[in-house]
Image (cartoon, rainbow, N blue to C red; front, side, top):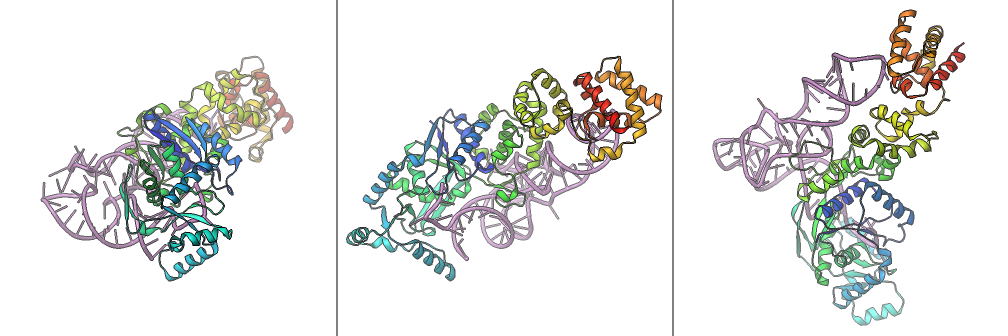
Length: 470
RNA sequence: GCCCCCAUCGUCUAGCCCGGUCUAGGACACCGCCCUUUCAAGGCGGAGAUCGCGGGUUCGAAUCCCGCUGGGGGUGCCA
C-alpha cells in the first residue's frame, strides 16, 4: 500500500510551496488508494508554536486535504532516544563534545581558506575512557552520525531520475542536540520508517539531505522508501518564493476571499500538468484520478497571483454551484456588517452579480449597494454631478417609477423615456441613477440593482440624493 | 568556494522518453474590434518563443551527446 505524508514544521504559516507539496502527497496517496499522514515536525522547540500548528491544520482542512493519521514529533522523543542509543551502540554514531563556538571557529577558518567546510571528526576518535571522563565532568555533548568516507550515495528520484552525491560533501552530522532533542535528518528517517512511508514527496531543497538519511536507513536496516523531489516555487523575480514577495501563506489567501477549490486547482498546475488535456479547471476528484508523479516538471515555476485570481474568478462565476457560493460568501458579508437574513435575496443577488468580482473580498465592495442604504457619495461621483440635470432626471424617474413595477426591463423603459423627454444622453440617466443608488461611478449594472433591490429602497435612495443636491 | 538540481512566448505549460506531422499548440496577462448605461463577463481577432548559447551525431534536432553560460537550491546543535 502506498503511504505518503506531509511533514510541516509549525514555525510559520503554511507557505504556498509547502501547500503544493502537501497537495501532491495527498493526491498521490489518494490516487493509489493509499494513506496520507500528517506529521507535525516540532523538534525545534524554540521556534515551533501551537498557534502555527493550529493554523496549519485549518489551512490543510480548508484546502480539502484530510489525513488518515496524525503525529506530533515532540510526543515521540522517547522513540528517537532509543534509536539514537542504538546507533551509538552499533558504532554508527558517537558523542561529540565540541562547543558551538569551536565549531563556528572551524567553519570560519574553512571559509577563509576557501575550502568546503566539514566537521573535522575530532570527537570521532575519542576513547571510551575519554568519553566517560568528559561526560562525568558534565560537559554537554551532541551525538553525531558517522559518515563513511568517499562513498557515492545514489538514489532514483521519481521526478528527476538518477541522483548521486558523494559523502565527502558533508561531514558527520548531528542527530541529537546537546539538550537531548533530536534533529530533523534523524527523526525524519525514524518516523518515515516506523510509519511505513513508501513515498517521500517533498521540496527539492531536501535533495542534499537525502544521502544523509539513506545512510541512517542503512545503518538501522530499514527499507528505503522512494523519493520524489518537487521543484521549488519562485517569486516574480525568480528567487525562492518568500515573504518579501507579498502574500505567500495559505492563510492570506483564505482571508482574502479565495476559493479553496480554486487554490487547490491552481497550485496543482504549478509544476504539474495532466497528460494530453488542454483544459485547466479540474475538480479534486479529477485531480486524484489524473495525478501522477511522472508528470511533475523538473524546473521551478513562478507563482502568478494574476492567474490564480483569474482561476478564482472562474470558480466564483461558473464552477461553484450557487448554494456553495452563498455559503462561502456569507461570512465575508457578515463580517463587513451587512444584514443578510434572507438567503433567497442573497441568492437572487449572486445569480446576477457573480461574474463581476474575482474574490469574495472584492464581492464585499461590489455588493454593498444590495445591502447598505447609508453610504457616502465618492468624490469622483460628486464631481460628475451636474446638479440641475441630475435633479431633472431623477425627479422624472421618480415620477415614472411611482406607479409601476421596477424590473430590469421597466427601468430600461423609464430610462429611455426620460432620455427622450429631457433630451439628455443615455449615459446621463444611467450615471445619475448609479450615483443615487450606489454613490459610485462604476459597479454592477444599475438595471440589476433596480431589479433586485426592493422598490421602496430604490426610490428612497433617489429621493435622498435629490434632497442632497437641492 | 564546494556540492546538487534546472533551462520552450513576460508567466504557467504541451511537445522531448520513441528525432521528421512544430512555418512550436493551449492558458494567464497584453492590444484591437463586437456587445454595452459604467466596470466586468462573453464573442471574434492580434501581437508575443530563431525552443539559453556553442559544438557535435544525423538526410533531418525543441527532441539524442558534449561543453559553456545563466538561474535555483544546499552547504546549521533550522526544517
